[in-house]
Image (tube, rainbow, N blue to C red; front, side):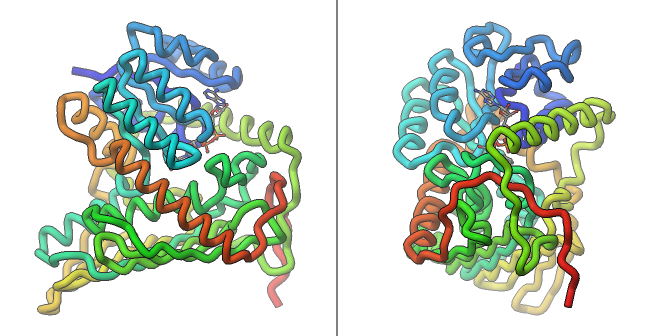
Length: 385
Ligand SMILES: NC(=O)c1ccc[n+]([C@@H]2O[C@H](COP(=O)([O-])OP(=O)(O)OC[C@H]3O[C@@H](n4cnc5c(N)ncnc54)[C@H](O)[C@@H]3O)[C@@H](O)[C@H]2O)c1
């Protein structure tokens, strides 16, 4: 039985899902909703329902489930409306802008009895699933310590002021921290997250911390997270050149429509192969220390290495597993068939709570985030001296 899915908001996140949907044998894309007509133009003749009106998705008898990939402040009203119309929902992370509204959404899903899955988030990704599987296969016991580090170019892509505003769910701590916290909790096997501390770095007095470190206890394990959103192309002395909100939105819209057009031309590829990080992830490394051994992953090799305390070593290739978005769609389908999803409203709200604590801790500590401006990186790379 196929699930008839609609995508609401086909930007960067929606595009990833769009590609996964085209490859998924049990999901049919029946509708796309976006306020940007250029997105709908690209899809004309390819998707049965194309609309700028979210309400149309809710009232369509053809739509069974809606993926909400719109800007974060819209997640709550759109998800509530979808649930009210008996649609199952996948909502992007962060689930909402604040903890109270995330709880409101979680409770609404419970009341309506519909499925609510929060994602995509990093624990769906093959390298994380591979680490968790390795722990189980090699009987490594409970997680004791986790060190997770990542560098992306998140801050140097065109961003609107809203996307950098933490009160609207923006900025790397809430947007990218959501992935890291999700992974930490997944590898820790759930359990409470306590003792959250964080410290941030904001280049050139930007509106939010583009880099951060955080530590916490997850399920009792000591977790250290390090994230750099400036990528390798922005050095000391460089600054991110400001864009007006309209300019940033226009560049993003153009980029999204262009990438969608390219994706519609690609033939459907294999569903496996999600082990390599996407191009925008520059570096990623994980070290998970368990009771009876440790598992590590690095994006350069793309491999997961396990060493048990008896010194036996194993190497596994996460690229053999299905992609993260395929796993997300599988979780939606399983939930529609009655299996409780792991990444439900409770999971998503807790991830958000931890990220909000991180953001507050980094703000309190005060390494100068504050000027609300949108931006794009300068192109010139300062000469290395
Ligand atoms: N899981 C991931 O890896 C991942 C990656 C990127 C973004 N995200 C999340 O996805 C959400 C969107 O981020 P993005 O980077 O894709 O943003 P984006 O700006 O690239 O895309 C947002 C899209 O939503 C559309 N939109 C605007 N108003 C809308 C409305 N009222 N209804 C429906 N669509 C509307 C825009 O036209 C645009 O096409 C955010 O919550 C973000 O945190 C998740």
